[in-house]
Length: 293
Image (cartoon, rainbow, N blue to C red; front, side, top):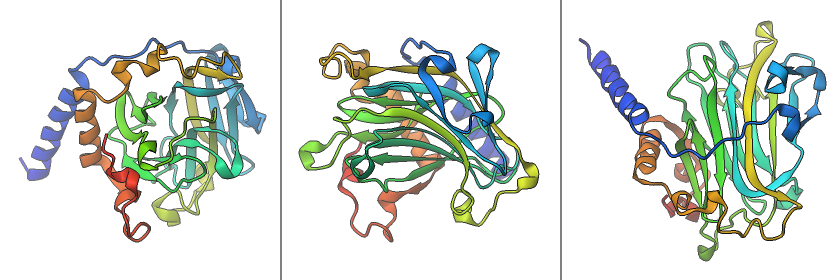
């Protein structure tokens, strides 16, 4: 057996242990139909409802991409969707799932951006955090599975203590509330939930070196199990500050030992870019990068 085969087997066993043995605490999900919580914002001819509105298909072709947004804005909570990404040669495409305050120069934003790839190459997901108008906090990981073969769950947990990005309930990024150290944290502006499928071959795949192949179009991404649990704004004035909200509970104030272990595993084995260590962009390490989890 070669070294690479041994390494693959060891990684497989470790991955099965990491993701298959331990039972996760997961909040009770309340998946909605698409039109209960969302409306189409861009190119309604390129979004098709499936299974009675419980799933949708997003389409990208040479004529247009498409997008949708939540009907409400929320202040703290958890948003989750199951997504099956574009299969095969998806270079130059971006499938985005994010929260945004839609307040221009002082916006808050929490991003998942799935960057298309050439066939056979890993799919990368880029996360970014904007707080009080300041962004440029990109991190990228290569997913450890084929996200186009089946649906996987992508979630954002947002409470007063931190923002956590999850892939199949595995934490891949934590942005802590360190306002006490002068680091901005999104806590006062409600955010809507958005998603788009669009062409971005000037940067999306290998920094723009790989261009979109329109011969492979149309490109399809699929969504289902739309789940938003949070404080609707406008709504009860006390909701966002209510410590009884489940997402503010002790379990969700920090990663538990299993979550922290998984978080470190992802960061050590699958991270391919981190603005925190990019000395060309940030000669001085940004203060939030030293905050830990």
